[in-house]
Length: 409
Image (cartoon, rainbow, N blue to C red):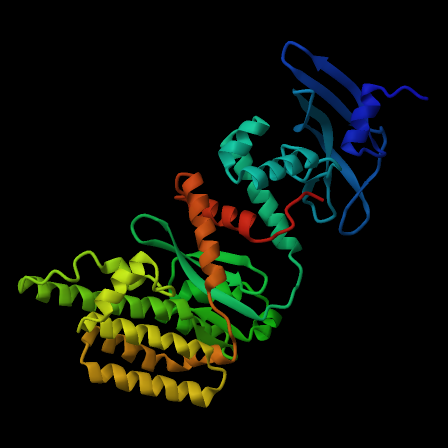
């Protein structure tokens, strides 16, 4: 069996082929480094990648790359790389097979860093394990995301969700576009304006925009206008959980007002009951539910409001437009008969946006996946101790939640 030299070992590790070869491998025990020298064969002809014509060598550039560690010794690759003059006069550095253009790490080392990031989910943890700086790991993430976006397959896109996410203090927001069926983030832009949302939707190709049947969102006017502008053939579906949130907020306003009035008369029955009205009480045998049931039998405006809020949940089970319309009409009449101002305002909102709410009958989609993604984004922000720069925020969101092909070729 032929003995495998260090030079042959690292040539295989780097996947080298002619004209490149490893000419020297030196182990420096004092610095705990392995230094690999790579050269290309003399007289090698280089071609213009566009015209396939022979390109003249202008000069040679000394380059260095970090490779996978060898027995905890850092492995450093050095090589002189030719720069050639293209047919249009531009100068281009020849691509080497072990690294991407402009990269400071070999492809295999970057793959290792990406794997560490996927396991650690923190830049600092991956940097410590790879013995890199946070900035170096962030650069690996940026290159990985750029590759992934270029490779993203032209998959059909039927349902998308528009959502907002606070990215920093001072009411700084980002708008996020999600693939609801694929459970992935498509892209992110700063701000939550109509212009920002329209720009985000236009990042999709015209063909993909035509494929979209419906968009799930809350009732933010800027998002409504953006969808009507860029996706005129898509239906808007107002998210059921946002509708429920508005109704819950109306109940809480009524509770606070009623508590003030009762407290002034010395009645503290509603004191400390805020979260009882916000919970679901499917099993009334539970202690908290028994306490809540005792409140429900009282003649309280809050109880009336809560019952109407819960009653609206029946709407989401309808599958026929006519019956769903009649349900909303009857529900709104009942609300306006109560004289509860906060709940009446919520009913008016439902009336104004009834078409988008009724579209749930045809496209049974919600932004629940988007909310799950938002939760993950929050954990990424916490692990990073905040992401003040939008570029960093976008990179990490797409790296962890874009379902991209991140590895170097």
